[in-house]
Image (cartoon, rainbow, N blue to C red; front, side, top):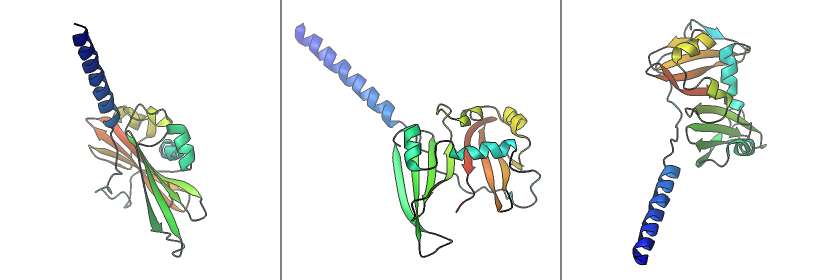
Length: 193
């Protein structure tokens, strides 16, 4: 009887260990979305400038921090990290480092110059449970989001795109992904290259 008791305890311990491992390895790692099929650059119906609600939402790309150390202090260690060297478009003799930090339902891309200046380039988030200001917009209905932000520059069944004008230097698309009328992801981008 004593041996059977230990086998049951051992078996239960193995089951808890296996389910715990399964929970920690079942993460949703996001890759950045492909370029939109719809051209928002040709005569968009609505453009949004600094101070608008879409502009403020797009500005949340920097809410986790401006460099990797700050982001890790806020979110903890990423599940995965990638890094590659790319030419600096403005100074071809210099390289920039592109780093991607992957969390469960959140991917953040940073650019670091050879002078060690870091910038968040873009963020893609779908996880409603990550504590951030994105929670106010994620996992709501498309209708309530449009009431809050205004009419999108381009609207399809699967995406709302707001064209954000950054002063006189350019514009970036704020992309909000939909499924069955609900917001499932937000792609926000900084105007840097």
